[in-house]
Image (cartoon, rainbow, N blue to C red; front, side, top):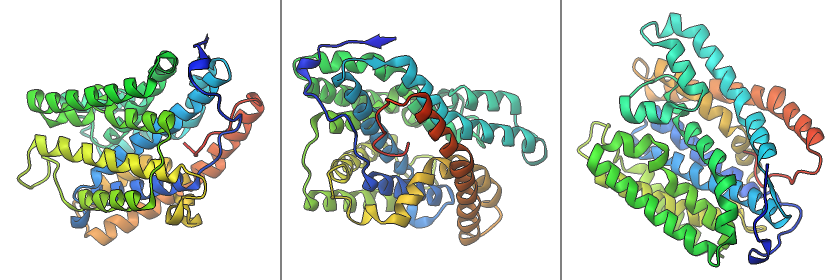
Length: 353
């Protein structure tokens, strides 16, 4: 299936989408703060916002890819879905299989097949938001949010780009999504406001704005954003933590993190502006970040109640890093090469993700 908007309203883009290592560096830092947050590091009590940074990056990457196809005349929706499935599903399904194999020994009280099905079919965002379950594979909620975005955005974006003021429509969508999250938090509580797809669209919309508007962000503005994000990470605000916090505060913190991530993504996406984010070891961790995120949480659950922080964090990073590297080099890279042979004319992705 292809969609054919009026491309004259959206300026043509280069055939190739350049790779920006700074975006992978930003992804690496976001992944690491999530790991430390789940390890209960006291200085990363707000590290849950690392997921919000991921959402902004994903909104930017996917919108950039799709906008390039729109400029070329059409979005091949079926091919886009297939590419996303080949990119995301293998590591996720491997995690689900490992969970089913080990859960009878490690988590015998789990409703194992139900929880595995929720993760495999990208439903954990709503199961967590409404029922607070599952735990061990519940971290796949953020993958579920992104997958729903991948399903809907190729169908919606061409109509946005065909509008007279596409950026204005995207800004309106961001404001509406933020207002909806705040309303959800006050009306139904933080679980639904934090986990569910409909309440987490705002970061994805900010990433889309960055891709379409391409604002120029100075180094000073990016530095201020980095400091603001560091403060947010260091100050715990999630209502489920053993601190006196409110759902309203959490929703505002998420918005601040998203806006900071927006500035950092805009800066990192500029040619030659990666800075420290383009440091090769950090970029490599960014390439591993999807695997690290998927593999880290079961180990955290096993370790954090019975071991000190340094053992929990070190053990989690070691295990998830090794598993992510194995998945990347033995599965993802061969699949990527196969994908490039299968779709030889597809545009390269601006970041690994």
